[in-house]
Image 1 (cartoon, rainbow, N blue to C red):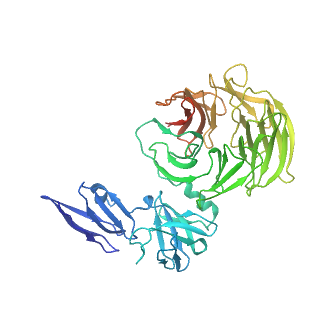
Image 2: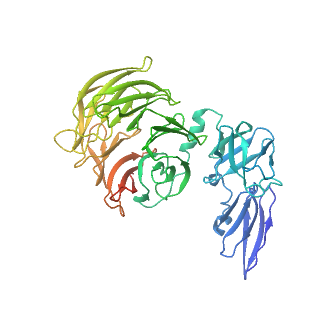
Image 3: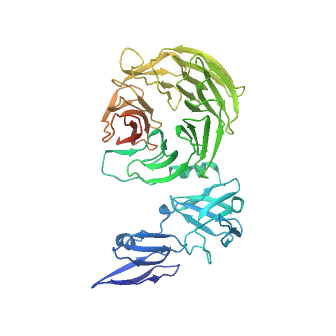
Length: 479
């Protein structure tokens, strides 16, 4: 078999012929392609004009589906001419010219390795006379960005613009209405967009951005200890991760892809986002009492309060400034963000509550408990301004375990380990039922639940195995 290698101009479109046996096909390549060649298996090795390389099918090459933005969403631009240094200091340095742009795929984006330096991969031929495959560059000499559609959003622009990139993933197309993704032992998930979510794997100590439908992993963040509960501040793109076996919080900036570790006085049982980058965390103070801590973005404890018993769940309503804590009973507190005063209000029985959820408008509180909140297996729709009142209840059936409020739609989802039930959030009427199928998950213990950002999918997270050493994520379309 023989092939032709064709070097294209950087502008316009070139057409040419590649011979293979007795067949001839007209191939076209866009202006971002520098060269390509046919391989023995029929695929094509493509080199993009900025040195990035990929292997594609003839179909993709004919369709010009090569060197595309969505394959290389991350961007680095030099502010001025600067050097790329080898990690060991023994290889020759490379020059990055002023205003030069490098692109990176989802698996090889720049990595923050110190306060002053990024470590960046260097594609062959992307830089003239450079023999390094990766190099250190001063953070002050470059800026990072990410494609949102055809536009590049730089990290130093408005924070909300950079955060918008977190929700820009294209819709994952599938004909299936539901499916199961096998995972490692995962304690918590955070939905992003279009089937993508964040998952914390306690076996590898990694937080991953993973596609629930395809299993593709786009980003990974390596922690030194196992991740537990996770919270995403959608205004800043900062993910706060509680660690399971250490008194630590890890803050991951998903926009700049940097992270830092912060020590806290207690192992974190649960967390809730407060205002101004602050977080409420709960844990045990000693064998008999618990504590509530208000921690700022730098990990400093601003205020501490004691509970009668060790707490297991917390939620905060930013609209009404109400804090909810379950520690044997369900307690409401009123919080003053100016003085940081916390005033205890009514306390009610609610069963053995595992998680607390506040509706987006702050008017409803759900407290799923395995035995239900009352005499039956239902979840009470508590009035979030007065827990002695309830607006009704959602009849989930034995045994209510996980739940989630929708943000845009007037819906509420809950599961009882076997069935996901979608209710009208206001009237409490049952709208839809979906059987939970977690094939391959022995001794399954379905716990966590989430709704996709587009509100067209639901997720149920299960822990699997006798020792809970693996996991499974069930997903289902709603529409």
